[in-house]
Amino acid sequence: MTGGPIATLAPGATDTTTFSGSYTIQQSDIDAQSVSNQATATGTTPDGDDVSDLSDDNSNLENDPTDTNLPEDSEISIIKTSVFNDENGDGFAQLGETISYSFEVTNSGATTLTNVTVTDPLLVAPSGSLTGGPIASLAPGAVDTTTFSGSYTIQQSDIDAQSVSNQATATGTTPDGDDVSDLSDDNSNLEDDPTDTNLPEDSEISIIKTSVFNDENGDGFAQLGETISYSFEVTNSGATTLTNVTVTDPLLVAPSGSLTGGPIASLAPGAVDTATFSGSYTIQQSDIDAQSVSNQATATGTTPDGDDVSDLSDDNSNLENDPTDTNLPEDSEISIIKTSVFNDENGDGFAQLARRSATALR
Image: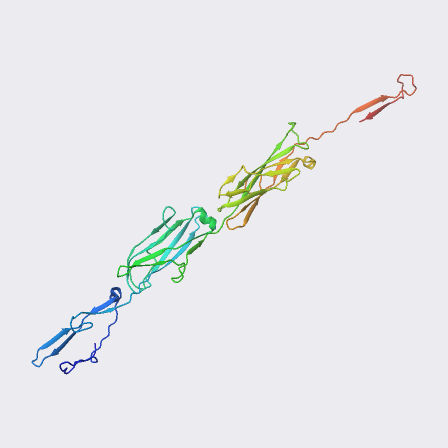
């Protein structure tokens, strides 16, 4: 407060220039959204007594305080970050692994916020959890990074989508009882972008091809026209759902072979199909001569992002990718007939020395 005193003030006189004042706004004033108070004017009468008056805000009648309204600037901001916890350390996301979430809550306004909370539709039971809070009071400019944390258990739909994306909401109460809120951003307080957690894809397919030689005539040997039956065990050995699963086999095509079944519309991770695909092959002479039939089939499936994965068949496991060999029992024989004719050279009907017999072999 500067100015004065006024040495003498005549009756009816008004002074508007002598006194002036300045006040620096405090946080309590911002929270109250106003500054309210009164001044006191005092003067001395000719007989030495003092007279005084409390100030009014617009007239000399009411003695009301002077209220200065302070426009409210109440804001809250939140950043949500995530870490994929690869619990088994294989570099891929599997069902049951988790994502950890951290929250940075900032009072980005000018008023003190109370009862600050964070909510997140992802982090609710049974697959998620959110702990911490509320924050009783958060001063302007204050940043809290430790109160709130969350955990989420990865679902199959997340693995198929190869990411988890969502937003949290921070809410605080202003001094006048209103709530302010903000949707989380992933790296700043400006964009309100969802937090995306990329999940590395592990898409695999495996196939085992087994065979049975059908000895149709039951003689224990392979003959031209007998058949081999093939069975196929197709496994989704990855972590993503596969669609449009097919089996192809260069052996099992017309005219000597056939392959039936499929495609499988959807094959979940870990699922094993043994009934969809089957094949039949008619033995050729070259197979009998080789005493075996050896080849491989290929299983193919489409990943959630539209790529294809495939595997060459193995004969007894999903590890080696060995051809399936069907042994054909050998039936190798040779026959000979020996016949003879007595040559009666002198025509007497009897055999004599030096005569010979003709023998034919056939």
